[in-house]
Amino acid sequence: MSDRASYELISVADVLLPIDPPQPRPAPRAAPVLAPRRLPAWGILFGPLVLVLVWEAASQTGLLSPRLLAAPSTAVTSGFAMLQAGTLQEHFLASAQRAWLGLGIGVAIGLVLALASGLTRLGEASIDGVVQVKRAIPTLALIPLAILWLGIGEVMKIALIATSVLVPVYINTHAALRGIDLRFVELARSVGLGRAEFLRRVALPGALPGFFTGLRLAVTACWTALVVLEQINTTEGIGYLMNRARDYGQTDVIVVGLAVYAVLGLASDMAVRALERRALSWRKALGA
Image (cartoon, rainbow, N blue to C red; front, side, top):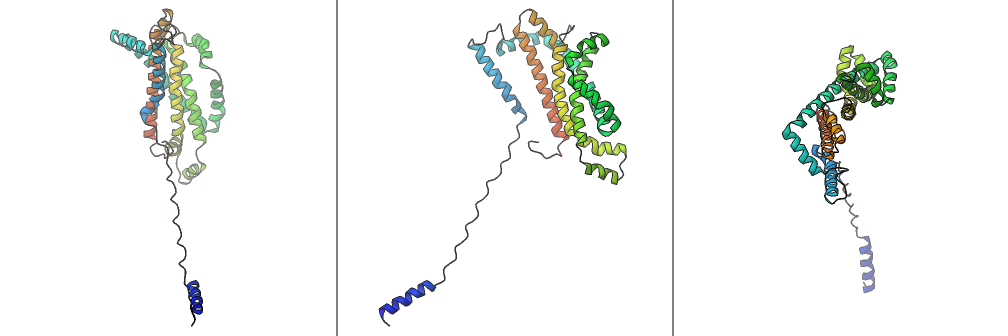
């Protein structure tokens, strides 16, 4: 066999040799989905701390006159002096008593009205419209009538705080009740649950998320109403302290009063959020 024939056979043999099939490339791994981390309980303090630092810097550099607004450091000094004298504690207890009493009454009334309106047609027809009218009327607009009806004492202040509180509790709880899945209602009927059992096992658990949302708004409304009401014919309370400080141009005392309101509102909101996480531990949701 000639060299040329041998070369041709070798070439044909090379072509006919089995070729290894290409190996499939491994599929790229999908990037892990990173769920956003839940903000720790103290994370809500970040914004207020930044605001205080900017405020202090503006006061120390002279950009903010003490006649307009005292520096946070000055307010802290004045607050410690008032604590040592016992003045701040006395006015704080008076304000807290008004706020918590009005809050408790308003939350109870709002919850009862929401259950009556959300679970019965007659209740919705007779209650919902009245609450919506109250929602459209600011609490401050009711002060003249409240003074005529209840006088200018403590009863009037507590009543107005309660009316401010019941609206957000009612609206959010009512919305949660109306949003309960009908499948749960049908299941309750099929197993023969009575009214009391249906209320305890279906209605109240379904309304809890909305109730806590309304409670957080109610806490804010409580302290907001108190700020105004304590400046009407009072001789004790944080609002009275601020009103008297205004007459003497004591901006540091006014800042102390505002700080007390802010701390109370923030602490109340954090307490409600902690209670909500505990009561709704069964709910799995983003950021829960």
